[in-house]
Amino acid sequence: MAEEKPENNISRKGSGLSGLILFSLISFAIGFAGIYFLTQNWKKKDLEIDKERIRLGYLEGKTYVNPWLGWEISFPPQMSVLDHKEISNWQRLPQISGFENENPEFTKLFLALGEAFSVICLARLDAIEQQPYWQSHERIVANAQEKFRQSIINNSNFECFVKVTETTIDHLPFKLMEVIFVQNEEEQKRQAIYSAIINDFMLHITVVYYNPAGGSLMIDAINESRFFK
Image 1 (spheres, rainbow, N blue to C red):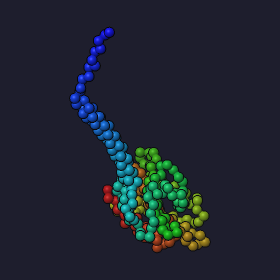
Image 2 (cartoon, helix red, strand yellow; image 1 turned 180 degrees about the vertical axis):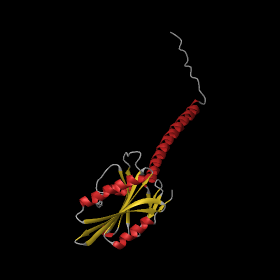
Image 3 (tube, one colour; image 1 turned 180 degrees about the horizontal axis):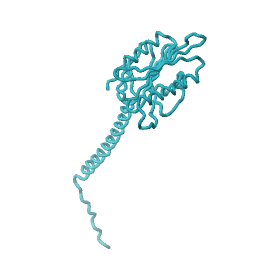
Image 4 (cartoon, rainbow, N blue to C red; image 1 turned 120 degrees about the vertical axis):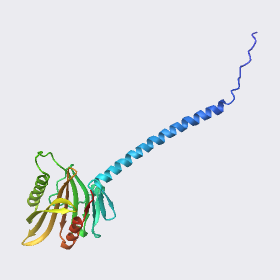
């Protein structure tokens, strides 16, 4: 009968502690990596939000601020204001003469509304289409306003009287189109369209008003707004 060999049980002192330390280190590394990637993802999202706020602007109470345009405008207290995101989510937007057509190259910045739509103010950025290199900014803006004029006249049931002038807001030159809508020799409403080129985009600010007093307050707010670039 073969002699049984005793089992070679060797006690490995500290092996349990070493395994625990190794497990802890691996867990820490995995946890750290997870936190790092989550943090980077949050930072990326925060950066996208910051870029959107810079480009599209944001509201601080009744003041709209757009760092990319370098523009700041404070609204009359009786006006309700929607920012870009609220405009996108709102289904009952009023139609504004000359601004009816939807286009992905149009970016609405804000919409300010007086009581019962008695005053409507819309600010919009338009991408500049490819233009001949010799065409000046003034001519590009004039062509854009001529399209507004034609659209307003062609789609209006009223007789339209149009006047175009040059003006400035803060130090920035704008072309201003003013339209009076008349029916049976009685004034029905007015519209003002301010247009200028900033950062290779056209900024259009239009005000439509049935209430002369409310319209004057909104126009004063536009004329007193600030371009800090």
